[in-house]
Structures are given as structure tokens and as C-alpha cells.
Amino acid sequence: MKRRIFCTFPQALIKEPLLFTLGNRFQIVPNIRGASVTEELAILSLELEGDDASVQAAVDYLMEQGVQVEILSEDEEAPMP
Image (cartoon, helix red, strand yellow):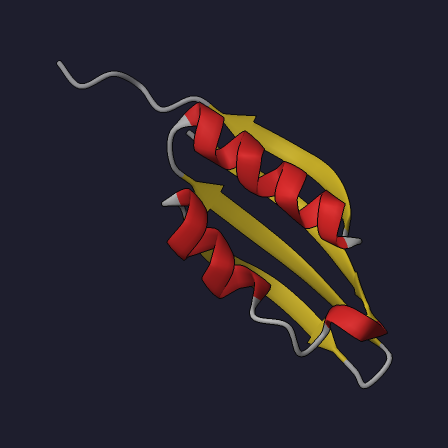
């Protein structure tokens, strides 16, 4: 599964290694599609790839940490023949 999300990181979380944590803890691949980072705010467009449960757990983790998350799209991968 691939899910595109839009994230707004508050100032307190800008220097936290949250994307690294997503890959390590949830075994997903975070792909930065776009970003704008200042000293006060970070805005990222991300594509998260992994199994359904892991992607959802990663999104839940971001929200628990204080990141505002908006789901942009959810793409089910076609099964291999």
C-alpha cells in the first residue's frame, strides 16, 4: 500500500528524527514528495509505502507525537500475477 499524506510539524518536532523512526519502527518507506522547513514550522508532503497495518500505525504515531496529518490519497497496490 502507498498512502500520500500532508504533515505539519510544530517547532518542537522539527529536529526530531521522526521519518527515521517511521522506517525503523514500522518497516515502511517514507518518501518526501515536497517540503518547506523554517525555524518555526515544517510542512512535508510524504508518500508512505508498506503493508496496510504498518502504514496506519506510522500515521497514528505521527499524530500521537503532535504532527498534524491530512490524508491525501491511498493507493492499493495491484496484486502480482
